[in-house]
Amino acid sequence: MKKKTADNNRIAWVIVLAAILAVSLVRLRLLGMPLERDEGEYAYMAQLLLRGIPPYVGAYSMKFPGIYAAYAGIIALFGQTIEGIRAGLILVNTANILLLFLLARRLIGTYGGVVAAAFYAFSSLDPNFFGLSANAEHFVTLPVLAGLLVLVKALDSGKGRFFLLSGLFLGAALVIKQHGIFFGIFGFLYLVWHEHKIRNAAYMDIARCAAFFAAGAALPLVVTCAALYMVGALDKFWFWAVSYGARYVNCLPLKVGLTILIGKITKIALSPAAPLYLTAIAGIAVIFVKYRKKREGIFILGFFAASILALAQGMYFRGHYFLFILPPLAILAGAAIRWRKGLIPALLAVSILSYYVFGNADIFFQKKPAEVTRALYGANPFPEAAAIVEHIRSSAGKDYSIAVLGSEPEIYFYLNKQAPTRYIYMYPLLEAQPLFLAMQEEMVRDITAAAPDYVVYVHVRTSWHEYEEFIGTEKYLFDWTYEYLPKNYDVAGIISIINDKTTIYRWGDPLTGYVPESDCYIMVLKARQGMLNVPSAP
Image 1 (cartoon, one colour):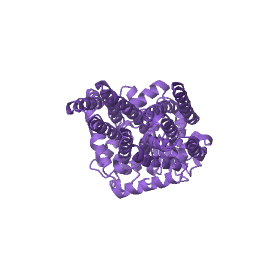
Image 2 (cartoon, one colour; image 1 turned 120 degrees about the vertical axis):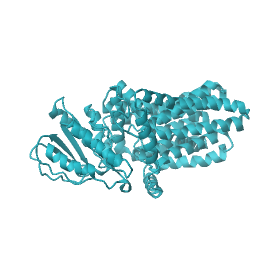
Image 3 (cartoon, helix red, strand yellow; image 1 turned 180 degrees about the vertical axis):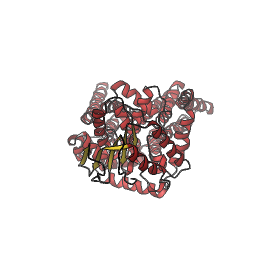
Image 4 (cartoon, one colour; image 1 turned 90 degrees about the vertical axis):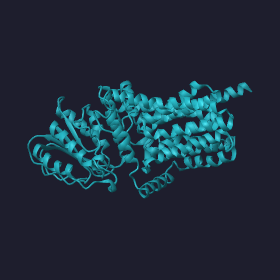
């Protein structure tokens, strides 16, 4: 019996490691994918951090600082390049798969754990959720899974140090991204429920365990705030990541959010991933039938509920937010396949994964890295940003400065240049909020005082704002742009994004008065007296 169990464990590990190898090879093939906007922000802020410039001092952002620290560790280890960031993602993704297997194995057994790990490994690549990019959700998942795994161990052993460690991991998830708070709340509530209902523990024992957990959960945020206070950044952090961040979360109308959600669900339902997630939904029924009165069932459903709350925060339902729900969905899929043992369920799992992989074959195996970025992100100028940087590097020498009028912080990261303004995103400057005009004026003062050698003007709507409802009426920033740029800059390049497959690059003279071939384009401007026809706002 022991030999059979050992053999089963070895087979399980072989399958899990094979899944890790398979998805890692896909990521390795796409190691050179240009950075998207959020990745550019994280990388740039990490770059500043490695120079000794704290978050919110060198650049404004409403994200919590843990993701910048994580990126700083990655680029310090693998290099300040696109490839370095992608290599770091492979490391994080591998850890997530292993942790999910260990957690699922404790909840639904080895067989179910293997299926869950394989489902998570491949769904973490899902183009619907931008899984190939190093989004913050991948990094939040790591401490969440570690914290929940330790929590299960803590509940089995009753030892305070494990409750403390579990809380510490889940608190770290919050520091990486605000959405992580829901997993900490779930962990706390499940702890109290388990000790009361399952162990029938005394109230003092419950309080002791909860206190250890809460202390661990609070520690990362306390340490973060103390560190930011010591470098003089706490007030900026509190404004951008807490005060402004809370307003941002609550400003999207419910109708708009539901419309976005319906669109996302429809897209997923029509994609090769549909059978995979339908299997997970079937797992909910299995949990209610087989586990509804067991602690494992309550844990899985609670974990799923927490992930839905994290996904739904602000009702934006961005594609990468769906990465939060993949771990519990994978466990649910494992429970569904495990419902019946034998060859047929195993073949069903293989068929579902094969359909998903081959349905995405163009992304996973065929398209070049830049083509994958275009396929995932549409007309966003992420491939073009890398090409623009190469041109500036080759023509500008080393000693030059640059400003980006648009939300493309990846350009600063590529060039390893500090922005002349702390506004690396245009969104808050256009939102109909009380400070948007003051923010525009501050950015104008920054750029005017710096008089950068180059300006990159991004005429792409998503680089300024996605939602028409939020755009303020004050056009001070654009009025300044149309006046300042013609007086001080010449056109050095115009890049027109025609469609998903075609981008036209035009460099050098004569470009004055030249009309871009598309309404979606980027202008590269060089400091020199001349005339420039600056078009209307995107």
